[in-house]
Image 1: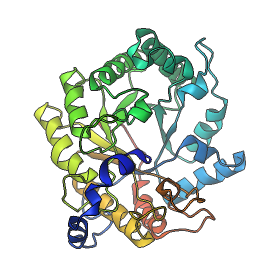
Image 2: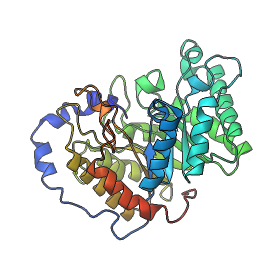
Image 3: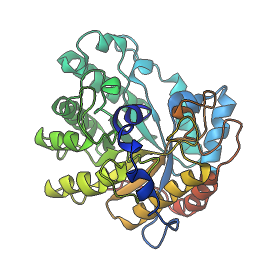
Image 4: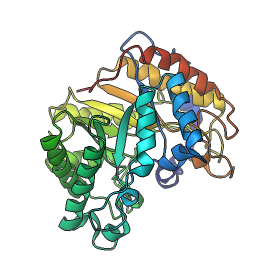
Amino acid sequence: MRRALIKGCLASLLAGPALAQTRQKAAPAPAAAAGKRVELGLATPLQDLLGNSPSDMQQQIADYARLGATWLRTDFWWDHIQPYRRPIYDFDKFEAIVTAAKRHGLEVLAELHGMPSFVADSGGMGFEGNRSAYIDYALATARRFRGRIRYWEIWNEPNLQDIWGSPPNAALYTRVMRDTYTALKREFPDCFIVSGGLSPAPETARDHTGAIDFVKGMYASGGKGHFDALGFHPYSWPLTPRDAVPWNGWDIMERNIRQIMVEQGDGEKKIWLTEFGAPTDGGKNAVSPEAQAEILRQAIDRVSREPWAGPIFWYSYRDKGGSRTDTENWFGLVGPRGERKPAYDLFRTTGAAGRQEKPRPQR
């Protein structure tokens, strides 16, 4: 999600009195109430994970395990791995991450996205040669990490222009997803494919496609049968997951995305929450640290009660700090100096139960 949704979709909607009224209705919810075990993970951008030194990265991943996380989602940037059109791939910076994750019992969900300049300058993903290059990059990455990574996410927020690289197009994205799914499954039958986690944009505009419209477009374009789980980012802040308003990412997911899947015969397929979080500083819509913890608490409770809900990937581990006018810097469970927020302790309490058994493909 990053900043695009908040700036582009919710700013005007959150200005009215309805926000205050709905937030008053959100009573505290117990973490991991009676229901299924909830698997938690961290969605950490590659640049944040690498930190200032290799030791910083090792310490951070070790703390993920202490928190009880069972998953790590991060960027396997195409433009980092293959900056030029020739088929030469550089995986050096990813090796240490995958090794550390496996050492600490974390499954890796690898995001396959990040358009190289040679693709952007030659027609983007609308050009067949570029789509073939993407599949080659995906296969090269899967081969490099054979036996260590089984879980692959095909792009990130493809319904946003600034991330897809051109005006979002559900039919074009679906073609990329279908072809990549087919290629990966042919060579790695036991791999698990998550569709690109969608921004919870509530409507369609010039530079983004509403999440509901995009999922409908995926199914209309033959997407069924070409993903093992649907990725979604049910951001809600400053609302909570229990605030029933149509622009709440949770409401979009539960009332609309889920219903589309049922109508399409995919009722047994899970929705993976591949990004979710709330900032505690950076603007007028930021929430208090206590409210951040309550948002996480409600998310855990709701996922524990829904058989169709997959793992929750919290965005993110640590605040970037710096500017206090940019919410992007303040999504962490810990502050920029390592101070732990209330959500950190809640995550750890729930995560301890979630690590009682190793994660498995949630089909």
